[in-house]
Structures are given as structure tokens and as C-alpha cells.
Image (cartoon, rainbow, N blue to C red):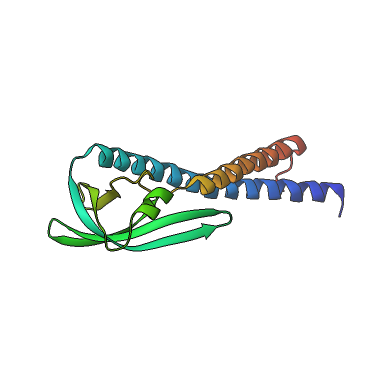
Length: 163
């Protein structure tokens, strides 16, 4: 394989991989940022709303992930004549103080489409999922895609070949 063929293969790889990384991880990044903004808005509404209810704590769960422990409680209740059940991430203090079968107070928010969002009163963990690890991963590969794409385009412009 001569030098020119290797350069064409490298520039094609950089161009294709860069395009794929840019579009795939860019769309994941857009999804994550949208989800974080939606969850942030719901969290704000849950914290300022005065609509309260009571639920029954059902099942505590502790999940270990490497060296960290994550704590969850599942609960069920009644709101507007409809039964609902949720699982919520809680802080370690709330997990150890509360016990299954206990009646606790929650904040309830019903969005315009009728979906219920709830937050246990006294829980300091904000509403929504934590996407921090996936966010960093997507940002790194998005930037890598930009670098690959820039390298592929600059090699095509420099060599004048479009393989």
C-alpha cells in the first residue's frame, strides 16, 4: 500500500467517524440537556407548590455502584381518585430515618397533560435522573467527533483528493 492510499484511508476514516460521532453523540447531548431542563422546571414547581398528599412507604432499596451507595424508596398513594406508585432516590439520612409501612407527606404536581410528579417531603435529592456520567461521556465523544471531522476535512483540502 503506497503513501497516497494510506492518506486517503485515514482521511475517509476521520471524515466518516467524525460525522458519526458528531451526529450520534450530539443528538444524545441535546436529549440530555433537554431532559435536565425539563426536570429542573418540574423540580422548581414541586418545591414552590403547596399541594401535599400522603403516601405509604413500601420498599427500601440500596444499590451499590463501585464505592458509592444509592438509596431508593418505593411508595404508593392516592391522588385525585387515582392510585399511583413511584420509586424515588433519597438521601442516606432519609433512608435510615424512614421505615417501610410509614405514612409520609409528599409534594404533588400534576402537569397539563395529567402526568403526576411527586417528591417526598424532607428528601434533599432533587427530582429527576442524574445524567452527569452520560453527559460527560457524550461531551467527550462529541468533541472527538468534531476533531475527527475537522481532521478529515483538512486532509481532504490539503491533499486535494476526495477518495
